[in-house]
Image (cartoon, rainbow, N blue to C red; front, side, top):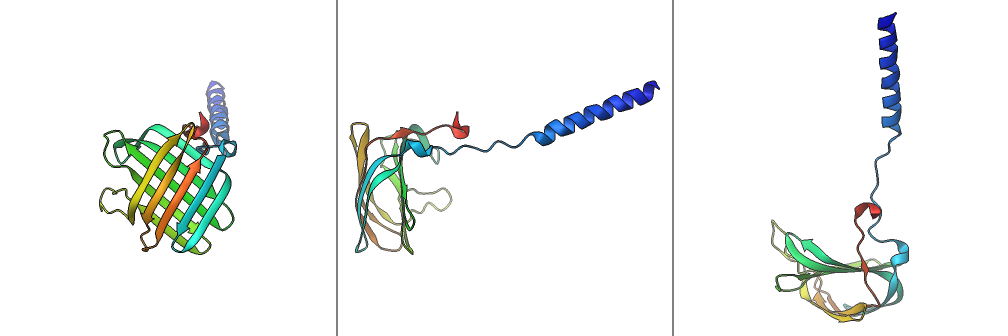
Length: 173
């Protein structure tokens, strides 16, 4: 009897462990910013020969101690999207004082434009060219773009954020 009690106890322990382990769901990372982190943004760009204008709520974030391919840098990011348009600008200012870098993705209807001055490890190639400057204004700031997308289209104008929110750690903590 003693052996069957041990087997029964071991089996019930295994069933409880399996139940608990099966009930655990992998944690999903929370988005880096919550929808209520939106701020007022004004976008005034000329893309090729077309205008891209937007005024309203969008996401503007800043990370004071960021990194891009092992280069310590401050990072600013602006994201705006609606049904058929999208702008995503990421701007890095290296702590070493070397040249600022940016990546820009813009979609207007069926057309997309991309420019980046970030040289990726491996190929060392940037995509497109140009310059983005940043002027801090209180809690916010304005990016001035003068870029050429990889497809040869010019992108010029400004993106202004009223404020920048801090990036939240993965998991929302």
